[in-house]
Every structure is written in C-alpha cells, then in structure tokens.
Amino acid sequence: MITLDNIHKSFGDNHVLRGVDLHVARGTSMVIIGGSGTGKSIAIKTILGLVTPEKGTITVDGQDVSQTGDRDAFLARFGMLFQGAALFDSLPVWQNVAFRLLRGSLARPKAEAHEIAIEKLRRVGLTPDVADRLPAELSGGMQKRVGLARAIAAEPEIIFFDEPTTGLDPIMAGVINDLIREIVTEMGATTMTITHDMTSVRTIADNVAMLHGGKIRWTGPVADIDAATDPYVDQFIHGRAEGPIETVR
Image (cartoon, rainbow, N blue to C red):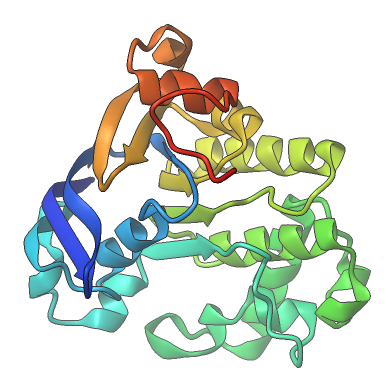
C-alpha cells in the first residue's frame, strides 16, 4: 500500500532522511520507532506530499505521490491522529470530529455529518452529551479520543498515528492503544504509527521499523523485535543509556 524507495530529505546541512526504504503492506499496522529528531514525522510528511524529498520515490497504492493530480481526492484517503490531539479549540467536539465531512470533496449535509460524529464518538467510548462541549472542557484522555474519532470519521483507507499516547497516564494510554487496535482491525485500514512507547508498539504493531541516522536500521514482525540482533534496536527497546545511540549527558 505504501512504499518509500531511497528517500532523501535535507534541511540545509541537516540530512534528516538518508535513503529510507520502507514497505507497508495493505491492511497492516506499521510502527516506526526511533529517537526524537530522527525524521519519523518527516517520513510521514513526505508520504502526504507536505514535504518534497530531494531523491527517491514514494508510492501509495501504486501511485507516485509526486504525480497526484487531484490533491483533495488523494488526501481524502488518509486519516490522522495528531500528537496532542490538535483539536480546533473554537469548534464544539462534534464539529471537530466531522471537520472533513463538512467541507471539501467529502462534504455531507450538516445533519448527516452530526449523526456520523455522534456514532464515531460512541465508538471511542464517549457519550453524545460530549458532542456540544468545547475541547477545553475535556480531559487529555477525552481529547485524544475525540482526535481518534476525527481520524476515522471519513472511513479512510490509511491512518497515521503520531505519538498517540504522549501525555497520557498508563491506564488511559492502554485504553487508547486498545481502541486503536480494535478500530484498525474493524476497518481493515493500513496504518503507520510513530511512537516511543514500547507498550504501544507491542499492542498496535504488526510490523516495526527502526529509524536511526536517516535510515531504516531494522524492520520485521513485532514478534521478532526482542530477538533482533541490531544493537540500535536492542538499546532502544530496552531503554539502555549505553550503546551506539548517543545520549546527551
């Protein structure tokens, strides 16, 4: 479904991606791990066409991302759960969830969009009375659920999750992880997740890729990650200070 072939991207002298190769099979969950500033978010932005690589090819469902004619139709295939939920603070919850359904090529009548929003809120464990509240009236965990409801509202084929459990307590993080896994399985969507949380990795992932130094160091089934011999993977998943990944002291 998604292929990155020898992707390079630099910002001045900062060479962020140095030949990234990655394949994400249709209907599977790929989780990208790696330290802060290693280019995980940039990789996702190149897939969406928000950042243009200097070299390499990206295809989505066999289509070269650089050759997409109708950008609105292309982006309509994607859903996104942003780090920190990234809700519109001036809009009530239901309009946040139905944001894409109220505009653009996916626009629905307002009453229908409202009904879909309520349904998606229920799917993530929120009651209809939440719909008319503002995001500031919700807890962090509830805001993250609203963000998840928005990500799935238009039934996208591909969903990106950017640090889905950041800032949540362990119990709520577990709830969000379980919800993501359940919903992705139900929808049959292809997903990519960025996370530092190894609990999320083990719950969400079918496959894992380790990004470090601008390249994919290791990729494989999540069941194989503990047996991975790559020293970067071993240091990262066990949280060791000593190893090839340099730490600031």
